[in-house]
Image (cartoon, rainbow, N blue to C red; front, side, top):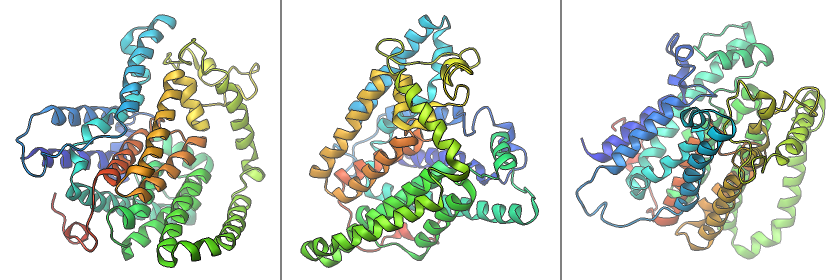
Length: 428
């Protein structure tokens, strides 16, 4: 088996973990809750380690792999790696715990290091096309099953899928099916950049999948920011499509009308989703408290923030102190985007996000295909507002879209159809 096939095999394993084996295996997800759930990605970090083993194995030089293709986000990823290790060392001193305990509390921040291992894989056009085929296929199966489950639950309250206990709590208490939301949001991004990256228009199944993802976020996960992200990147993609069709001057002439329509539509979406009022007003207030709290903790330990203390002993620090801090006990760093990650990592988090932004800006002007990079950049920026890309559930999707940004930067896809776009071939 070639190294490329090993890569593909590991990626399929990660797709299975991201989709929780489609929730079809009775008892499997509850049994793996400490290893693969919304709040634990230990199996994922093991597979990432295996990807690195594949990356380190020397391979024969061929025409397809001899060209050097740089990874344009290596510097921030290396800064993150060194920073997480350093913070783990200092956390073990500050919180009087072992280094192993510290790194175990912060291992999720190491997942993006997989980006380095994936550089050889995503330097081939055929692998990017293969990944599109398989990731969208997994996404279509997963979201279709979830929508059927959601419909059955709405009609008679029956749960026939095998969810983790975390997911069941959310379903029972709030009728929210948030499992897999991060993965499906990434798939929506991948669909929107397809015409610009792979040089092929959306297929009927692409459109069906995108609509199903919107319906999932609208009625099942009820994640307002996820929905905003999914709609925003599609609006951007459609805008670029219209720009190509109409030309520069016609587009500029019509742009005031287009902006007016978008503002009206955006206001309607915000109003219907009750971003700042109605049942979700408390959520907005809690986030306001969280912003203030975590901003004040960015340099809690001088050069780094809160770091990686034991959550059971330092819940008062990680979530705020009840009765003392406004919103104490209700706050989480994951709810305030890049600010929350910076409150944990301190100067390391700030440096990471700044360098990622600078790399994207550089890519917009230097890439072979700048439009996909602009759309991915938009996705990243909106995520940073309230859904940090470094959150444990979003670290792997971030790794993937940084790799896709590299593909847009380095590769030149040919226009037209491809065998990899077929939905009838299932070969790895």
